[in-house]
Length: 198
Image (cartoon, rainbow, N blue to C red; front, side, top):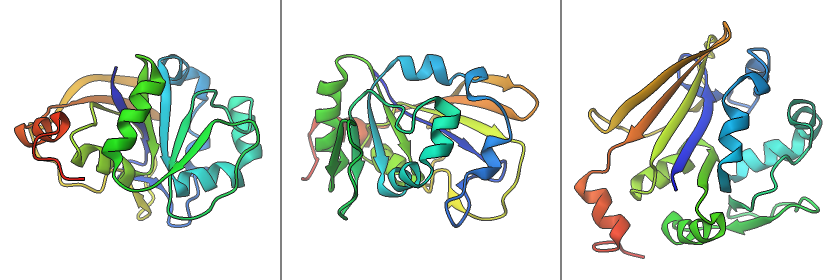
């Protein structure tokens, strides 16, 4: 079981524009030609921030055109938010807030041995990293620059924490990098519970 941050970014490190647009992404290739179908088949639980969730609701038609469904997940989804958000009928959604460590334990149980996907945004993935819970980053880099926007991973992470596992070209518009997150002593202690404060 792995906890994975799987996302797409512009060449200059932004996952969305300042106003949360992903229009730049959809022109870069077909989702079915990417690693996504194999990736999602191994996912047992998802976590997403409120901005990502609200984007899914606002862009239901676009999501349906890309994936075949306005809510394409059959797995349980934990949405991290401090606000009251609309519920999507028929979807298994759990609204949570606070520390990611306790929620991660719930997600692991629900995933039943499959992987956990941190959908976004970047700061939520960073919180899982801070807690020593993030195992992999799978980053698809698009051949565009945005100049500004929502950061891919707003954390300072220095070598050799990220270990490059593979590089894959996707058509002429994207490259996929897969990194393993090496667990430092501090992260291992937090994961095991010693030194972790609720």
